[in-house]
Length: 438
Length: 173
Image 1 (cartoon, rainbow over the protein chains, first blue to last red):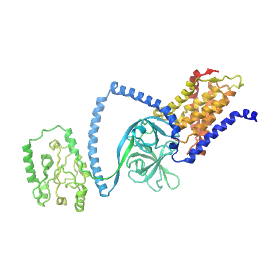
Image 2: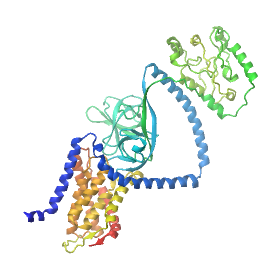
Image 3: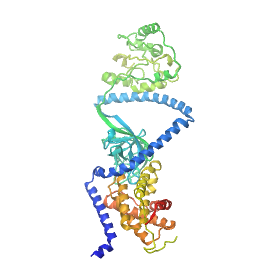
């Protein structure tokens, strides 16, 4: 017996070691579900041994790179700066338009008593390592429990979603990427509004599942988070559709190119706090496209207060003729360009409606308007009355109106008179009956 | 490319200092985890912990220490990922045992032999991993001979260079 044991000692030990590992695997598989959490204690040893090196290398690398790029290699920075400034101006104009759209959406959500999820707090983190295997698509970030990270928090970049926090250690965290085959994200197609489940494949691709094969999905359509997974807030960019084919059963096989570059992640944001709150139509201070343009153009000195007062009076007398409501107190505080009239306005004045609407008129909240007024606002085409849609107003503020609509002189990027129309804070709103169409 | 059959008495058995025994596998794990951040394809084609396992197992020529080295390195590699612990462990245990058993019987000191042995063991490793992942853990896996051969060749070439570097740390018993 002893000779047999001695002869096959190596083989017996091999079988024993393999058996123990298979047993361990079977236990983990049987437990299922939150497996990584169950084996957290064992994993922390290796993670604790490897990540300090990674952290050190990353910090040295970043330090060297910053020193070089921020202090030595500054070629082309001026040109880039100019370019970026121009880009910022463009984006500010775009932002005005979008914020008006968003404000309108908020008002509508308020009407419908929507609950929204807001990203209340994020933590920036640096990617310091990976699993080192193409069968486990995870990355390690240099933030952990010590800054409040928890399991299942969403991880994003400016480009799009990245994944979710899987395991949290004291100073590092493990992030499961969306292209791992065990990940799943609720997603929605931006235009067609088809919902599906985003999954990774063993080859590291991202596919959208659970979209019926009789649906039409165009190539290039943007995919957003649907919020159904309770991890990612709704509306974050996921990627774009690159290929659509027939999949299993009655579903399509839709390949997605992730918006975030998952193979070259450096910095990410972890959403540590989300807020569910009722949508409210906040009365925020509106910044108009005209204001931004006015800032860009050569400044014109403010007119003396007396002039302004005179103009106010004139404006109040002349422009609101025929209305029994007094002019808004600050309607004329920014004279000239804001209260410019058009020839067609006289006709309107005859009918008793306002014939001169300051361009600075803020769109009233939808909730403030009676249904009839809202209806009439919609019918009026939205260019001559104060109740026109916020979006269309913002658009008009940046472009010349196509139709020669009466009474309103819209500011545009090409109008030299804009500097005179110094940032008006006019909250002048025409009376409700003014909104009735011609 | 001669692979010389030698008796157990003729082959030399090496040992390594404790810092090398611990440091080299740890460094391999670190590089394996860090380099894919800059070169994403690295993780697809290269498996440094496997190369280190093969090297130690062949140099020590002791099946028990070989399989234990493989098991420890494999389990550590499992712990860096999120899949159940033991898949790499089992695969590398088999490779460690096989490489050390082969080292006892063959002279695997020359580059040609090392290239072939590494290529062969990469395929064995992939096959065991595939079987365990699919059969025991029910993971979705696809087998590709083309990828296996390419990655095996890439590992073999890297392995030959790495082994010559690690030869410097060998100590005669």
